[in-house]
Amino acid sequence: MNRLSTKTILHVVGARPNYMKIAPLMDALRDVPGVRQILVNTGQHYDEAMAKGFIRELSLPLPDRDLEVGSASHAVQSANVMIRFEQVCLEERPDLVVVVGDVNSTMAATLVAAKLLIPVAHVEAGLRSFDRTMPEEINRMVTDRLADILLTPSPDGNENLLREGVPAERIHLVGNIMIDTLFRHLPMATLDRVADRVRVRERGYAVLTLHRPSNVDDAETFRGILSAIAEIACDLPVVFPVHPRTQARVTEFGLEDCLKNVQVTGPMGYIDFLSLTSHARLVLTDSGGLQEESTALGIPCLTLRDNTERPITVSHGTNTVVGMQPANIVAGYRAAMRQEPSSTRRPDHWDGCTARRIAAVLQRHLFG
Ligand code: UD1
Image 1 (cartoon, protein in one colour):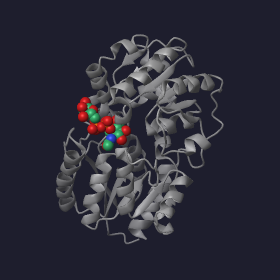
Image 2 (cartoon, rainbow, N blue to C red):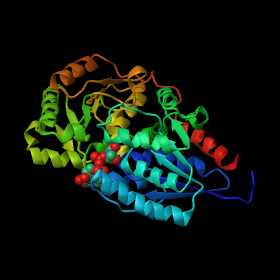
Image 3 (cartoon, protein in one colour):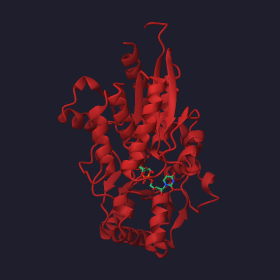
Image 4 (spheres, protein in one colour):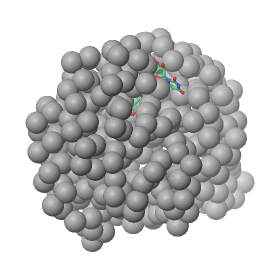
C-alpha cells in the first residue's frame, strides 16, 4: 500500500432503514489506515423519530453533509437527491461511494456517482421481488446495474446478479450487515425500555408494522388487513408502532375503529423497537428489514405481502409470506402460534461480522 495516499469514501444514508446498515461499516472502516470517511444524509426522512434519532442512537458521526430533500413524488425526491449529491461529489471527489438498501436515495446517489465515473459499492445487492409495482424493486435493479462492487447478504442475491449478467468478480457474499447492528444492541433491548408506552408480557404479544403503499394507500386493502388484525387482537395483544405514511392513511380512510383493541404508538427508536420485537411472540409486517431481523431473532414472522425479495428468511428462517387477504392472515396467525420461537436457524454469514468482511473487500478495491 502506498502510505502517502488517502482515499475518500462517501457513505450515503437518507431513510430510516439505512442508518443501521451504514453504522457498523463506518465503524469497521475507522480502523483502516489511509481511509477518510464522509457521511452524506439526503434527508429523505427528516422526523426526529425517523432519522436524527437513529443517527444518535447508533453512534453514527453527525453527517458531514445534509441534503434536506424531504418528501415529494418519487421523481422530484430522486431528482433533488441527484442535483444536491452531484454538487457534493464534485466538491469532495470521493474514490468510492457506498450506498445501502433500496430506497430512492440509494438509486439517485448511484446514478450520480456512475455518471461521474466514481465507483459505487452497493450493500444489500442482488435482492429481487420480481415485482415491479414495488418502487424498491426498480431502485434495486438500477442500483445493481450501475454499481461496481455488489455486496450480497445471501446466495440468492449472487444467483440473481449472475443471471442478470453481472461478472462474478464484482459480486461478494458478505452476509447481512443489519444483523451486526442487531447483535450489538440486543443486550440493551429490555422490555422495561418501552413499558411507558405499551403494556406487554414476555412472549405474550405480537408486533405489527405496515407502511408499503400497496398495503396502506388503497382503502379496501388497508381495511381488510386491519380487520384481520382486529380478529387477532381478540386472542393476542397487538402493538402497532405507526409509520407517518400509515398514520395519514388511517385518518384519511377513517380506520380508527379497526384499531380500538390494538396498542398504537408512534414510530420508535432503534433500541426501543428491538426491545419490542426481540421479546414478542410474533411479528406481522410488510417491511423487508423486519423479515430479516425476526429470522435472526428466531421469532415467527408473517409477511403481509404477495412476495418477498428476501426468500432466505422463508427457506432458512422464521418467515411465512401470507399475502393481504384477511382469511389468509388469520390462518397464518393460527399456524404461527403453533410454531415455537427458536434461535437455532439462521442463514450463513448472518453472524455479526459482515461489516468486517465488507471493509476487507473495500480495502482491497481501494489499495489493491
Ligand atoms: C421509504 C422507502 C421504503 C422504506 C421506508 C422506510 C422508497 C421508495 N421507499 O418509504 O423502501 O421501507 O422508507 O420507512 O424510498 N414522512 C414523514 N416524516 C418522515 C418521512 C416521511 O412524515 O421523516 C411521511 C411523508 O408524508 C411522506 C411519507 O411519510 O410523504 C412517505 O415517506 P417516503 O420517504 O416517501 O416513503 P416511505 O413510505 O417512508
